[in-house]
Length: 382
Ligand SMILES: Cc1cc2nc3c(=O)[nH]c(=O)nc-3n(C[C@H](O)[C@H](O)[C@H](O)COP(=O)(O)O)c2cc1C
Image (cartoon, helix red, strand yellow):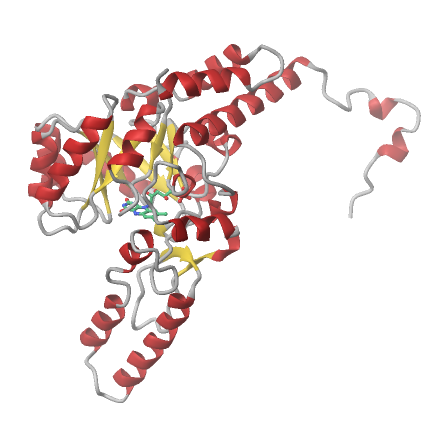
């Protein structure tokens, strides 16, 4: 049995009263645009995570009906080429590639994606140039861009972006300052030209359904997939996720506004404390005139170089970077990718069912105000 069928069966089995297909039809109509855009059963993107989103996890997400995305990080073109080929050998379902716009070989990476007929390319890590978007579109790839605010989303659409991801500050990794809940309200009602995928802080299907009801075409999750069986993340990295609560996923500390720190959400660990101490030391040296501003800034930025790899691949969770979103509190065990997706869909279907049943019943307190004892039932407030 294919992974996709297995998911479908588990989901069908979940709800109690046999109305699943109706609820599923409702869910499918809500995310129809996202499914059509991605070419998938589920409009759930596996957000690219550097070192984590490689062939195994990406193929597992796509095989289970979602949309896996390879994180190219700082890969040179040759490595990306091999990773795409390896992923394609593990799945015949659609998957995408995430490229970092400030990569010095961005155009070569784009050419690799086009030569490998990658259907969708996500441009991340900054606002992409028009040339990159054009090259992808001319080569036949669908272009997805991250937008931090509505104005930029509109601009990216005018430049040729065919879908937008809005990612709130609850997310893991590099983040913007605004929460997913607020971004969604600011963007979704006003950006109807292209499908919009909501990312950041989504841990359960009910939240996913709510964003779809607000107008999203789909969602993107990262943190929830880190502890998938198919994820190659080191057991230490996975254990740290399973142990962590939402409040442990904190923003990288910045000590001095003159030396801005790129905001990254990660689990607090000894490296976070060491980063504070290192910043203090560098800033002191700057104040004493021993370092130029640019040198000091570079030294601060250098601190985290290679740190994600150290944690994800080598399992050094003390000195490495444990990038994680606040939804880490909802990662409670290792699961198969198919189970994670089935759980999300099952939770959305159950909520759909509750709403459907509610809509068929009279409002819970209708008429109560007229009955005996009504005055006592009223909440005095305050
Ligand atoms: C460990 C880790 C690494 C990430 N690396 C990248 C990356 O290379 N490129 C990118 O666009 N987003 C990256 N992200 C963000 C995810 O793609 C995704 O948008 C985010 O995890 C969604 O929010 P969530 O973590 O609350 O699910 C990363 C996130 C994590 C947790």
